[in-house]
Image 1 (cartoon, helix red, strand yellow):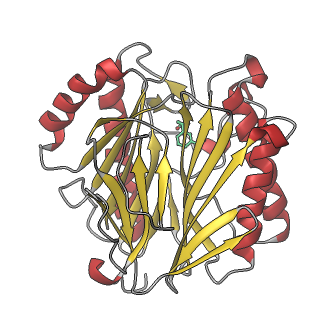
Image 2 (spheres, rainbow, N blue to C red; image 1 turned 90 degrees about the vertical axis):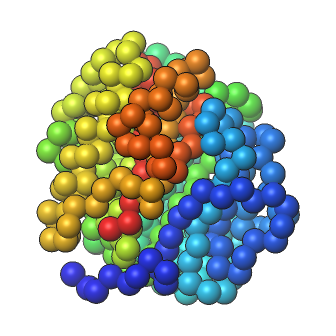
Length: 329
Ligand code: 3EB
């Protein structure tokens, strides 16, 4: 492994109250949650239209190395610091024949853009899909999203060897006109994909989950950080504990524990742990579950762990929550 830089000069993430004061020079991007979240007027701020259920007023701030350059490329807006790039795309679906085409266009645009930049390695992607559980069978919107995304990855894998699957989150925006918002982080340095024996790799899910498997890895180990994908109450490939939010919470945390262990083995360094230096984000289907979820998280992980809970639909109907994390590693 290459020597990993101290956190102070690599990519790092925190939750912070932004208000309207200017962002510091080393901010790569700041995600502001919900309609009411306050943010300075700065092209490095993007709004995520999911309402906070815990951690209201906190934004997710990614800091990089020194001065930022801001740019656009077609529908892509980005910020780069010489070593890292944060990008995002907002697409209205009305201009496409279906969500599969919109997802294919967005992902192809993103992946082809990176093939032309020095930030060759896409580490982490978030996708926010309106009405993710609408539609039946293979027409369910999440499955259509996966189909378009898989076509884009297949096209790029056919021409660019060595491109893998980034860590990811894909959740539903409960309201609003149908649109697809995609945000991502990329770097000059390659990341290492991490999987866990507790869960089948998502890109190997069997046919019953849709015409194309989801294109993501469970976590990405990058210099200084483990970027943990959205993780749910799935063992092997099957959802477990339907209808029981708290049981799903603990199964999900067991999955994340297993991932951290796998990451430590792959990196041949001490296993990273969830700690007050980590970030945890919960996407929660039912707002009424927020209080018991916070209570269980505090009991299991301590009250100092930085936490935001956002109201969102999860990609399978029976899943009631999804949890992602950023862990110094
Ligand atoms: C899962 O493990 C739960 O399609 O990008 C989690 C993280 C999930 C990312 C995605 C889906 C995605 O299958 C759902």
